[in-house]
Length: 319
Image (cartoon, rainbow, N blue to C red; front, side):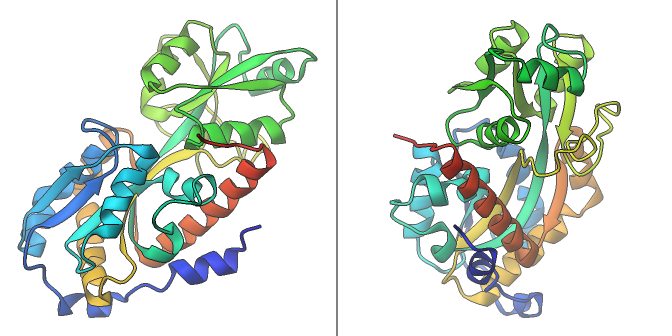
């Protein structure tokens, strides 16, 4: 069992903003994105790229290193010089991989330090209209003996897979997981009725919900969202423990000098809090967090612990 105090201690050895003025980059600052170009993570970096370049006095260079469920890109960041000129944008998989992939060349908790938790996208519990009209109907359908419901995800160990398993367990549903390599295919199969439900990224479900192709019966977010104001939160429905969303944040090698990490943190937090940046990201369906390193460390610990429990309880393995 992962202990919150142990994780927090490993992740909260972070710099203070008071030291941020003691370092300036002397070459371009690389932001590794461990996914292919054109993915959901790209805008989070691209929108602040010019602002960060002006603030730091050096170009911000985006470097895509996809593969191995983010292990390829994270290994690249681990092997780069620990001088502050290489960072990596990570997601929920960073926390899940601690348990799913314990033999990586690096230790996510020991070898990397949080810089900023940038954004989050809530997940919508979307069901095919033939299944139910609301959450109570969904529970009734899913608890029926021999119901045989199928729920999709973006792959084994992804955030909506782990959220779906947590929902299945806590709500006592009769449901089977179906992993997809292509999120668009999962969405199409949900709309076509080949899947009965899934926890999907909010932006992807707004239009299908508006035209009646799916029914949004719950949202995994702290509060209701303006895009789907009639959709209750998991907490409202009595399931506050269900943790399902897609977040993006920046980490650096833990042995990068503290002043360098502090300067990067301050620059990122300031850029994300600019009204024009918030506005553009919110238009795309992101919730801007702009959490500094301390809060981000606490969140990584929370997700790592929750994911470990779900992975072990459901004997989830990756090849």
